Structures are given as structure tokens and as C-alpha cells.
Image 1 (cartoon, rainbow, N blue to C red):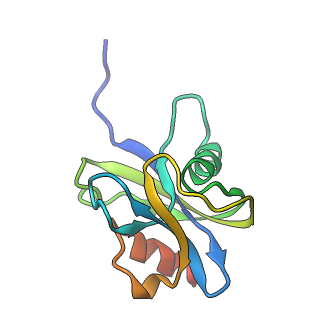
Image 2: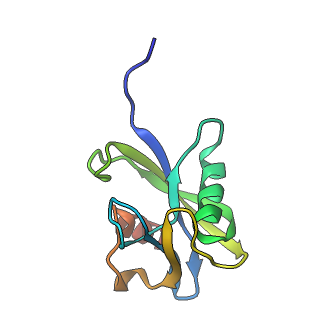
Length: 130
């Protein structure tokens, strides 16, 4: 018997680099073509921290260490695909070659105030930088 429908669980990762943060240009809807934090859905059997490391590597080619929790973002309207709750992390120690992969069209270190960010990622980055 199926239980009640619940929000889907996601992760977003803020990786400061120099004067900016690592951002991906989204290759798919929603917000196709807009810049966003690396992240995505948590898979069954993994922790949110494992999902954050995996999604970062899949989308950017970078291996990171999770440093701390930024916060949990649960506004039912934050994602046009439905009620998706994101656990946001600050990560450092990026190793590897930056390389856009999976659903990222491009990956760059950018000053987040200079680009149009998808979802509520502006809020997440602001909280991370406090």
C-alpha cells in the first residue's frame, strides 16, 4: 500500500572559488539556459551528503568535500516541477577538471550577482556567504 505523496528530496551545492562560485548552465527545463548551482535529486539508498558529492561530480567534473549545511529550502513553489525540498551545502576543496556533464550545458566560476539564477539559488548563495 502506497503512503501519502510527499515532496521529493534534492540537494544544491555552493562551491566558492576565488571571487565567484561554481555554476552550471542548465541544459534542460525548467530554467533551460539559466545558471544554477550544481545539484539534483537524492537517490534511494544515499545520504544527502553523498548525493551532493555525486551530483557535483556528475554536473561539473569536480570532487568536493562537504563543509557544512547551509539550510533546507522547502517553499512548495520553489520548483515549477512540483514540491521539491532542497538541502543546500557549502563545499570546498574542489579537485579535478571542470567539465560540464549530465544535464549541465556549461560550467563556470562566476560572480553570482552578474547572472540570472534559476530556482531560489540566489537566496541559497546569499545564505552561504553570510
